[in-house]
Length: 567
Image (tube, rainbow, N blue to C red; front, top):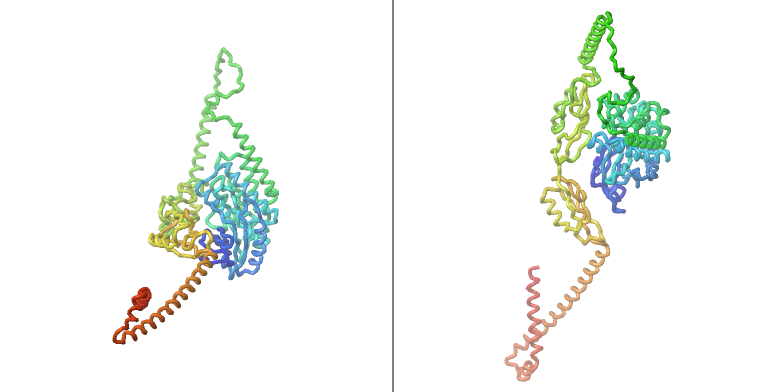
């Protein structure tokens, strides 16, 4: 259920959906009380009827809100509104670590170490408050516009039962990142988080997760049974000290991992220092022949030794040559048989290139085949690719595989297309902005809000905000000032005074008209006599102002009556 446009808790106005996961949806919202942007994570409908889960969800929501740390996304509030359970969190203007890795690939070991230290600092604070995260993954790690690492999703992760995330006999979680004990459904501890941090560290260094397969069960089984390829074997630039930290964190047995996150932080710092010292001390690589190295050699005699011929030399050389030929043939036969079997580790076939192709067409093409399983991992804006076109894939095109690897799961990033940049309309006339945007093909909605800062009718803010990417047909909300309460009272008072003034004027006109009508009646009666007397004529002559005044009043009466006839 999409909550866009609704209000939670009588204060949080949902603006748009910005993320979705297996357990919750994340919305961008506006807090009308504090006038700030927040993020709201809403529990999915299918989980809200589980009374035990909801009870723990509420309890741990309070615990999550108690966590305060620069590397933790702050939780401001939590509640339930008409059966909708939600968290109100700090809104992070940035991107997820998963998006960052997808864009850059394998990170430099120094950068990966710095990010891991930020993650560890956040988890260390959680562990001090007796909270196990249980769902550490790049998708739950944000990097804001200042480059600061922010870990989120503490409350939901801890709200599950005390053993692990299990529902209906199935493990719920991020299979690529959870620990062997989580995969087996055993109790999770602080050391389970350490394993997950190790997986994220591994992915940053190599650009891939330690274990991947066509289905979640196979991945979970690999966490329990397989040892990952060491990062250094895939990228020789990774220092051995950093490689060792990762591999210890990924130990199958919890007791073989770091005792706590604090110990892991110290180990990373020591590894970085050792790697930097090793890099500084390492001389520039100079390609030379072996014989230019400084070595001890025996003194060369000035008189060359005479070569003594041995009759067995020829036979020995023939035997050695035959042995070499036989060995080479055996190796060639073994290698050929191994390659033809289609089960070599590297594989003889290459993964197709899907970048630049329409996702719907590709998905339909391979829907009934057992070669690929193609899924969308992320959707993002792109100025280069049209909407619906694949812009990235993992594994990459050209990666080798064998028949035994089929079907191969391909995770793709799909373009949402390019859009226009939302202009800054704050302070502009709302009616004019509405007309302009409607004419350009956008769906415009007007919402009025009280404002002491902006005049009535001016735009207070917009959704999406200025600078956001927007597309034709997209819904745009204009929040327009309805004026301040004080100004509304002043206007109301002015309207009342004007109404009283009009009533007084109306009464005055009515009295004047009545008097004029009486005077005209008297004049009409006087006009009925044959001739005015000299005294009357003289009186009229002596008072011209009075006659003029009466004439004006009579004319005004006629004009007023004509003006109101059409009403």
